[in-house]
Length: 240
Image 1 (cartoon, rainbow, N blue to C red):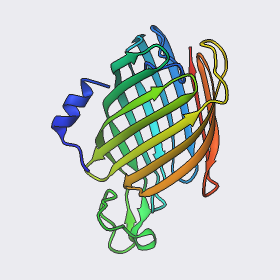
Image 2: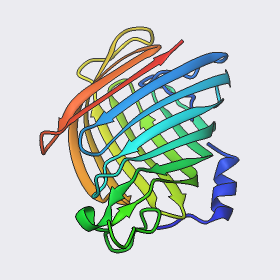
Image 3: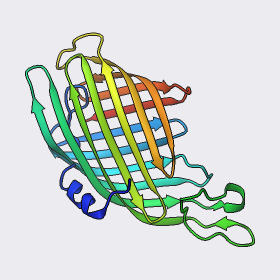
């Protein structure tokens, strides 16, 4: 499903970098650094500054795996806000949203060798003699959101992240369910065992299920595991 510019405008007024006890908290006047690697799918890096615990802004860079050999990357600026939080006696729930703009880069490739999949445009026009397609840059916009609920022993979340441009669109929907083998203290080490399902659509179409171990302690979040196909996944976040 494509997202209209009107919906983009509304979501941009919302958008994440505060967090609950099972994730690094977006402390006021702090910087959050994130690295995410998903073998044969994508890799991403983000840096955000939070003037307040409910608001942050910053930059991101993502490289996508696609069905042609050309490099597909997205560089973007993003606004993040905490839209709603529910603080309960022994649980917490949150709604986040984000929006931004950026640039999509598609490297040169040979259409005679790689081909062009149906329904996708991959940039410039191929040279009729050599089949070479030149590199291209186009603007993009990004919107997304997340809803989560957790206690000291249970975690669940659903998120969606969407990029759209004149040459391709990319969307990732992620559902996570997790359990902690012990009740962690607020400032102690939290350990989570997670099942993570993700569906990619647009320029890259694939569904995957991964089993992950997450270690979290106040300002540091480390996560690692593998999909059912044996593909490595790893994530690290630091708040300073």
